[in-house]
Amino acid sequence: MRIGILNSGGDCPGLNAVIHGVVGAADELGWEVIGFKDGFEGLLPPGDYIVLKPHDTVGILKLGGTILGTTNKGHFAAKVGKGDIAEVPPEVVAKAKRTLDQLEIRALVIVGGDGSLTTALQLYREGWPVIGVPKTIDNDLQATAMTFGFDSAVSTVVDGLDRLHTTAESHKRVMVLEVMGRHAGWIALWGGIAGGASVILLPEIPFDMQKVAAHIGERDARGEHSTLVVVAEGASLPEGDIVTVASNEGGEVRLGGIGEEVAHRIEQLTGKETRACTLGHLQRGGAPTALDRILGTRFGVMAVKLAEEGRFGRMVSYQAYHVDSVPIEEAVNKLRVVEPEGEMVQVARAIGISLGD
Image (spheres, rainbow, N blue to C red):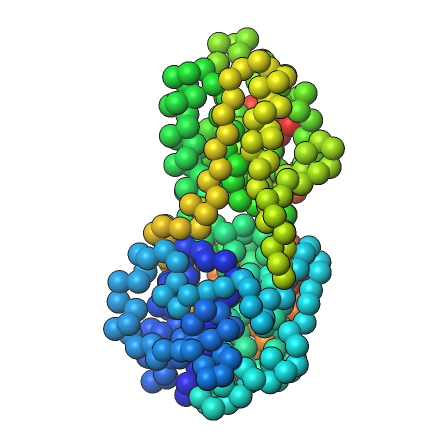
């Protein structure tokens, strides 16, 4: 038995843990694992891959990124915007399938986010023996309660806020931290609560800059002269605009700049010195947390179990502390966003955090 694995989409702490889990579990069954490089692109003739043995994964648990490489561009890019899906051309699928057949791959583990899993679903419907593993630091896939990489991203946000707190306090400034979160504000919400932010601005909750300024003014009146503000990159300005950096050819637009805009408006409205900081890809890099190493390994082991049972067209899923699976078609295009009246939002409000509304 020979199975393949590839990573597709953005990089994420814990990807190597999934590879480690797949290779270890497959070796116990006497199977061989083929790792395709740079996502789906590695499937195109003549094929770009390596044979993965257990000794190849020694020490990779602690490494960020992925030893196989990944890409969110190329011939297999499927996500072009929220709800907008582009199918992979038949001729591209046919070329990749020839590589799979020539290598006698009996199962293909695809580790990716919503766009990559949408491609996986197309391939499954065309007869490919695929198994999906969810990957996104945004933690925004409906079919799984948590994705690996999220905990590591939140930890990075908390570390950033810890550092900003001391400089904000020293200068009596407002510090605005922009974090990732295109459609869902989970990173901002969890990181903001854990990092002691006083204001958290999310894509799911429209905010009013006047109310943000009033909250900062109230803190000043109480003698709390420094304020930490966390804003998700996908949060809309009060006028309804999402701040973008540039168009990403063949994919979704690149977000960025909301932090600077919010900082500018806070300074105008309050008169307080305000600075902005963007974490950006720092949230994707570095060593994964223990939680993400364990979750990634568990996901990899479950993927091999699904292959052993011949249960293709399914995605590994984490629910109620248990790793199982769901049909890929039930997982894609269904985002899990922050509920404005959900428990975590209520926790934030209960401890005096402003959501800007």
